[in-house]
Length: 332
Image 1 (cartoon, rainbow, N blue to C red):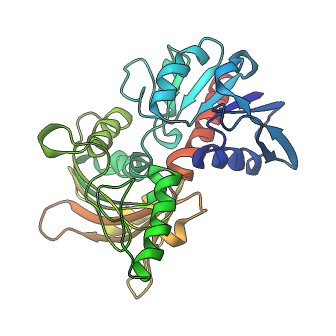
Image 2: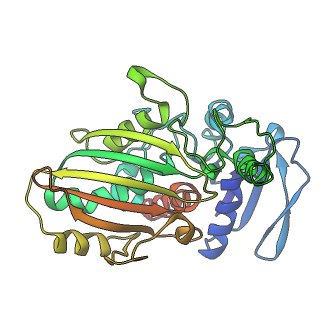
């Protein structure tokens, strides 16, 4: 197939290139597209150097599938143009809640790919992607009533500049120098900021509402959710503490078996020092890791667990490429 990547020079765009290469995705021609500032740069794919083309002049008929990972404003302007000539897989939040655009995590709801009306497929928020991949097998077995989630999200979820800011602030802090914040509302180095995206209704942030709305759209509109999203001084990988209430009774053994056999999930849960996965260990891995699985002793039919996933992979690049694979299989 002929594939185009818009936002090819960014964090996620580069990861999509990497995933396509590792998966040996069937590609005839790969077109790398970015802003006019990045046009002319060369990026490697399978030992070849491909020159980056300018978004403003790119001919979208060249790509049978086009990945967008350049942010909401770019998607709003250019995705409708691209979708007239290509199937678009969009990483931004712009089309996620459009009722005519399927929001896909292939392990959870690839059947929704039968309902493509605008030639656009949306990729969910990175935090949502790793959440629903865990909830799906448990919902099938025990029917989920309610989820309470707290996230601990890395700076890469906000882009390259915030990652650079974490490094710079860490250095300044260790040198006892003055720190100013550009990409965060407060100092991120050696800190935790309970604020991701803008504030919206009733004191929630947009990030928190994204997780709630997207999970309902992907998995089940009847599941009740509440979320608190926190930015932490980590470069890559998002962690989540999840409390799940079921309608049916369960055993921990059945929970572990269901999660460990689910595609994309891996249980690492030894009840001893270090018997769990942290963001650092999840970096560069495709799996969503689940640890600290235990009954919630304060509420019937409820568990607590901890999960960690590389947000640039599971939450973005890997999920996007898996959407493309599922779409191709669906068309055959």
